[in-house]
Amino acid sequence: MESGELTLIGATTENPSFEVIAPLLSRCRVFVLEPLSEEALRAIIKRTEMKVTKDAFDWLLGYANGDARKALGMLEGAQELYGKVSVETLNRALESPHLRYDKKGEEHYDTISAFIKSMRASQADAALYYLARMVEAGEDPLFIARRMVVFASEDIGLAQPTALVVANAVFRACETIGYPECAINLAHGVAYLASAKKDRSAYDALRAAQADAHAHGNLPIPKKIRNPVTKLMGELGYGEGYEKYDRESYLPDKLKKKKYLK
Image (tube, rainbow, N blue to C red):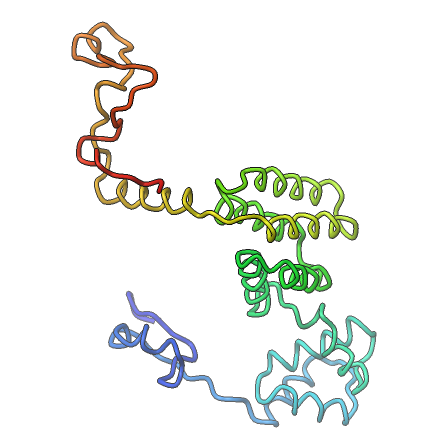
């Protein structure tokens, strides 16, 4: 690959992401991946040196639909879960949540997204269902609890500040107890967070302030609230006129009229 060149795997005009990457294509080398033939799949499966019956071979070929990764994943799953590869164990592996739930795959992200959005919509039943799916699939409880801590401040915030206390307590319980018992702590926290009132004003205020900090850089801090740690600083007006409960805005002059928290 030449310097500055980007390779995109599987990018086609039928792909929904094509419109996003289209402007880059003039500088890219695009590879379109086609399904493997049955002969190629058979050769790949044989290289595993696992004992596979003809019926199981045919099952794998039909299931994989030209994708060697699917075939090998199912083959290894059946062997790992049941100690042998047959049509029966392949079917049982297909139904196993431990095999279907790839912690780096699409279902992982879809499930945590559904979980967060269910809590955001105050749908406790839906949130508990998606929690149960993650628990049954062996998802790391600390991953779930971390998202709950973020959710407590991002989506509940000032409406019910105790949500952050509960979420942190759940995280600590998951750290100290672990599965299977910490699933109960997670359920307790999820029911509480989903039922709580929602207020994103603190989150939105932070993002607005960050945008100004990024756009304007380090604007001069008003001298009134600077700390006069030396005699010279005092002579320059640092801290002059400061009052503990002042009503004047302490924002930099350029942002005096800004209201982030609404």
